[in-house]
Amino acid sequence: QLVESGGGLVQAGGSLRLSCATSGFDFEDYAIGWFRRAPGKEREGVSCIRPTDGITQYADSVKGRFTISTDNARNTVYLQMNNLSPEDTAVYYCASKYPPTYCSSDYFPRGYDYWGQGTQVTVSS
Image (cartoon, rainbow, N blue to C red; front, side, top):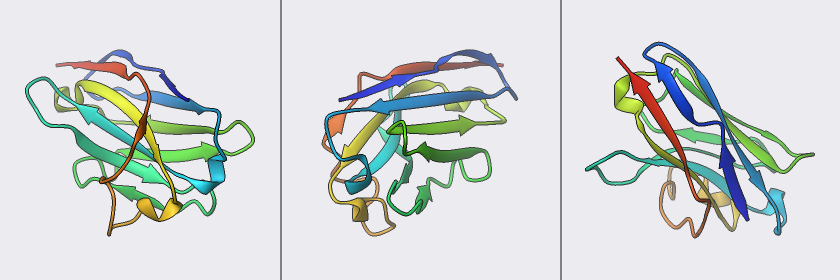
């Protein structure tokens, strides 16, 4: 199970931190990714992390602004989002995929198959 939280309404230039609490699987055996779907657009892979070794990937659109991290003791993945713009408005989802190699330039954002329900992020101008 994956449960997202932390979404909300923020002004442009502001920050939010999303959380993805996981349960029911061996956290460090998986890749965990953040994705988003904006109205009228296809789903986009935002970032991923391998809890086992901390390796990360980022979409070009968020590099330098978003940071993904884990708390392995809590089986939780975070997405710190800074300098938000209206273009970041979307429903944000976390998802998992076995094995951790799915967080790599060869695979991400393909193949993720267990999904949370999503959390809405709205950035006003």
